[in-house]
Image (cartoon, rainbow, N blue to C red; front, side):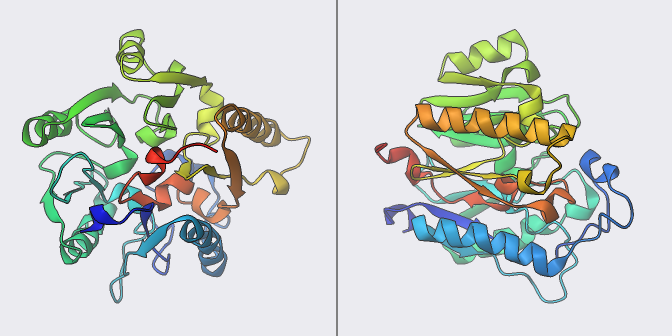
Length: 302
């Protein structure tokens, strides 16, 4: 069983079918017709840098791309579904996409997990995977709803799989998945864009974990769109390619300084990766990685 493998396990996809032909989120609307075109070779190099690092710290499965695949966002595997880690039986909940051109990605991922021996169950309500549902510990999860996913998804999961899900309403179109505003750093601490949620929602989070606050600006520049492996935090940053006099540079620098401060206070180290080609599709680093386990949460900090 995969549960018996004592190391971090992830799933990624090589972006051979990645494109930006259909603009299906607000970030994509900011590009001109010329600038939004994907440089496929550069996109592959960028994803391979992340893959290489993760595979040096754990094991990374690669989701096969079907022949003649037209699923432009298949590389964003964090939207395809979620592994329910609190269950003894290896279980995968497949997504139910709101955006029409993304429908079919969950079928590719479901076939993969079925072949891996998982029990695969499609979600009957709108739900967009691990990017919307964050695992903390035991049976505690945090679920985002309102823009891409439905709250009814979490009611169903709580009933069917004995899950304690804290629902958070997403209202900012730029933070359309939960991974833009929430990043569980450890089993006991969560990085949160606190301004994105109500006082009641923040109180619910405080009941289960220590909150590490960040600003909405830092969320928009992708601080929460990170992946932890062992004592490293992987994050996307294009700061080396920005003019030091630009507003984008100021925002990116603010995000990086805050993330490095959080990492330092928790005995971790930040590793940055250029993900410019994925920004064109409205995605960042966490979108390209799906957790098969959270083994890093069990690792003692050095």
